[in-house]
Each structure stands twice: as structure tokens, then as C-alpha cells.
Length: 427
Image (tube, rainbow, N blue to C red; front, side):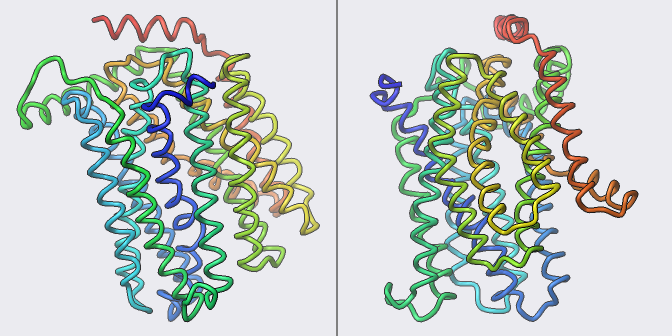
């Protein structure tokens, strides 16, 4: 690991996670949902504001689902992952900055900017993930991927802590109110994001395409490559099996994260309590992600993922019987221990199972599945809840996603998957 710290491309790549996690933490998970209800959509009923916020999140996810594989294919054909990453990052930074200027009650404009900023965030992740193979050797994927997530948890947590202090003590920062502090937090996220993204754009190198081509040719070939990729993923049996397993267990992960917030609200936690729990998850996630990277190096990424799935199964059982408020905070800590690990090791294992020359398009599919996450879980919970009349039993139903994901993951032949991916790369 010491050698990794001395390599500028690796550290620069990790700092992008440090940069964009400020948006994921402060805006997406922290302030935007609360500020939208209380400031921009204060005139709407609670039900209506929840509905429109859900529509915005779904719209952003659906847009990424449709464009992710195609953009990845085009970027591979044109050798332009960094250019696409710069475009999406720039768009997201501008839209996040614009949130500062949205007047109270202008909830439609706030949602429009939020959708575009989230699209920029999610679209950029496709090309950021794909650049992993350009900064690390295959044997280093686990540790470098874990370092990226670790940087993200730490960077996002640090800025979020500062932003929370701004809202709790606005006078100390020369601000008139907590609302003004939240608006300035959007500015801080944009500046943070833009500043700490620079190392990647300056120091991470991307190989040029073998053959130069015009933009029109690149786009046409990108469309053609997209169709081909569908067939290639199905032909790469081990890669396909992993993606199926990943979709199941990451759906369970995202559903559990959302259930923790729902549980906090249901037992009467106020906003400050929820923010505190979110901070706990961030700072626990930093060292935990690094430890999981070590585990991936020593035991292989699959064992680390299996361990995380087992812990999530325990979380489901815990949530089933949870009653005391202190358990909510403990649950946040436990989730923080495994959330970064299961994400980072999934990314590094997938990087082993894909052809390097097609990293963009294959990570496009990977991130597409990530956007489908938490679709099956809530439906399953709702169906079980209706049948049984018990929300606690519905929580237990999420265990099915983890169990099925673990079973399918155990069937993945990693060595055979690497061989298949290498053969495809050599064609």
C-alpha cells in the first residue's frame, strides 16, 4: 500500500472520489431532501413533495440507465473517457452552484437543477470507474478501488461536517439563518468538487485510440458497439453471472440504506439525528473500506463481498426486532463498516472480468445495474407487507436478495472469467 501512496496517478484518481462524494453526501443524502420539503416546496403537502422528489430521483436514474452503456461504448471507441468525465463533472458543478440562486417556493426549478446535477454525478462515475484499469495493475485493483471509496467517505464526511456546523451555528459563520447556511453549502460542494477533481484531469493518462476517427464515425461505431456489447456480456458467462449476483445483493444494500432512514423517521428522530447518523456512516466507512481492500488483497475480493453480505443479513435480522433509538445509531455504524467494502470490492472484482479495451462500455452496464438498485427490494417489501400485514416481516424479505446474490456469486469462476475477458481483448 505504501507504494500506491507514492504514485501520482493512483492518488489523483482517488481524489476524484474525495471530490464528487461531497455531492453524494451533502446534497443527495443530506440537505437537498430536507431543504426541498421545508424551503422550496414548503407550500406543497408532505405527500406531494415526497412524490415529486421521488419523480426527480427516478428520472435522473432512468436517464443514466439509458445513456450509460452507449456513452461508455462511444468513449472506448474515441479514447475519450476523460473528456466525457470532464463534461459531466462541469455540468454537475454548474447545476449544483445554481441551486444557491433558487428562490424559496421555486420547487420546479430546484428539481430540474437537481436532476441535471445528479445526471452529471452519475454519468461521471461511469468514466471514473473505467479509468481504474489505467492507474492500477490487476493485482492492485482491490486496494486502489478501496482507496477510492475510502477517500470518498473521508472527503465527503469532512465537508459534510463543516456544512452541518454551518447550519447549526450560522451566526458563527456570519450567516443570517440555517437556510442561508444550506444555500452556501451548495456553493461549497461545487467548489470542493471542481478543486479536487483537477488532479485526475492533470495526472491520470488515458491511452489514445489505436486509430483516429471523426466524431461522426465514433458515434456511429459507438451505437454498433453497444449492440455488440449486449451479446458479449451474455457470451462471457462468468461476467454475466457476476452482474446478476451484483444486481441482487446491491439492490439489498441500497434498500437497507433507505430503510435505515425510514426507521429513523418512524421512531421520531429529528433531522439533526438523521444527519448525525449519516456522519457516523461516513467516518466509519473510511477505515472500513481500506480494511476491505486489504482483505481483497489477501483473500480475494469474493470472500470480502461474502463477508459483507453476511453482515447485511445480520442487519436485516436486527432491523426486524429494533425498537430502541440507540439501535439506529449502532445500525448506522454497522452499515458504515461494510458499505464501502462491498462497493469497492465489487468494482475491483468486476474490473477483473472485463476486457480492458472495452472498460467504458462494460462499466456503463455495471453502473446501469447500480441505478436499477433498490427497485426490486422495495417492491418485494411492499408485496410481503401487504400479504402479512407486518412491516417487520417485510424487512426480513430483503434477506432473499442477499441469499440469492451470495449463491450466484459463489458460482462465478473468476479465473475462467479472466481468461474469457482476455481472449475477447485479444480479438
